[in-house]
Length: 276
Image (cartoon, rainbow, N blue to C red; front, side, top):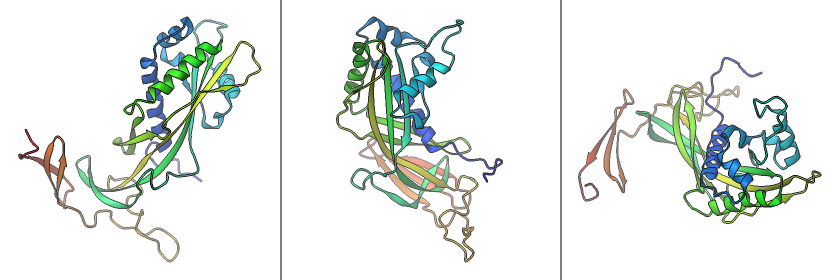
């Protein structure tokens, strides 16, 4: 039975879903309307233009639309669901990324986060996302999907900056990338004669960080092996730490030092050929 008093960070899938939803918002800003209805969709209030659906509804466009129609969509009494509408769902898939797609890091390494020296490892994840666009005619739906596929040809747009909640509001960012080099919209058969539906499927791959040393409930019993009774060994995550390091980037050269007693991190810019 789950412990209701145990505080956990935000679920990693929800963090990825949030980043995907923001990307869809960015796509709407990118989109150039080709019809009156798609122009109305672009200008409509966001909560009535893009909706997230439960993962179980993926590949079931009719259920997506039925669930959307159950929710109140207008302050006007008797108002029906607004069309066109973009509905989306996403879920982890069973197969993790291949090694050639994403390098694994299954062991803890020392990293500075939030001014402290902590330990981090990462887990490679593949997320399948799907959006379905519902319109009263195929031209509207195809217009949205075609421009989304063009949007995804931009390398910058293909990368999602996911903000993972590590513990107590401390955030670590990780990049998830659209795997497919080319996307294709797919028409969906429907019994409604005045409804046109197109879907686009996308796979995202990236690393989900696991961090100990921030004061979380599993800091002392993660990665230390197990006792004869099968319980996880309790051990401080401090251990050995790197107290000095140099970080090089296009912006310059920074010398980082850590106090092993307090865990505090300080950095100083090193003037040189890479610094202005």
